[in-house]
Amino acid sequence: AALGGRVLFCGDSAGAIYPSLGQGANLSLEDACVVAAAFRRGLRDEQRRDAARLDAAALAEHVAAVRGSRRDFVRDMSRAHAEHVSSGDLDAEAAAWNDGPDGEWGSRLGRLWRGWPRAATSELPPLRARTATRANFAAFGELVAESEDGELYDATAGGIDASLDLSQGPPRLYLMRLDGPRELSVSMITRHQRVTQCLGALGEEKDFYLVVHQPGDEPSVGGLNAFRVPPRHFVKLHAGTWHAGPLWTRDEHRTFVNLELADTNITDHDCVDLVAGSIPLLVDAAAS
Image (cartoon, rainbow, N blue to C red; front, side):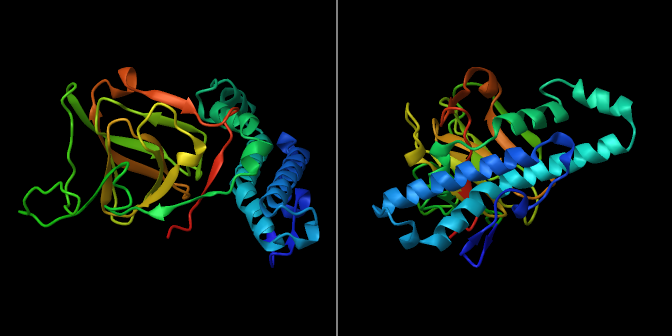
């Protein structure tokens, strides 16, 4: 955590956790690596070798932002594990461990073990999310807002509708239930080349975040854009648009309307690991 932009808390001083998973020392080492990487970036960007002349406030805020979601996840998982063990329900404990890598506990362990920060990404500034509009989302798809009953179809740049291509197979319209929180970071990105996929959240005040990259064969970290999709809107992605999400920070289930083809997730699902080792890239939720 950063205090007044001048003091940076690392290790146990940034927040002690339950010791049942043995992650306190690991978090301290992770903090040290991220701080070192951030100093390297600051020195390189400013072409300075005098640490006292660095923008200490910006450096502290960057480290706090990069470490926040990881620390929160490890803290919550350690507490849940401690409560599980202290309850004395050893049968439930054994069952949780034996669910396999796709079970709830197994998937969280995988995230714990694979989600440690790498220096290369710790040096990258967070992606700053923008609130999506029809204009700023145009390179990736179309933003569709609610309209009055009876309004005529208009998929022009200034219109309200989406131009769909569902010609490559039978379409599939379904409700997709996801568990949150889904942290505001991205390491893998996906595309569908045969369909204009549509996605929207159910609920009057449910927004979400989406990370996108223009269609093409080689997505890059530099080409990523993060958007906040406001409530009562959905997005249509151009065929081939790379995307990651939906993402949100609240600990709640959410339901999304998803329109694609019946076999999209079987025959038209290309994934790329953006940075070797599944390095999370932070998304700054302060949408402009």
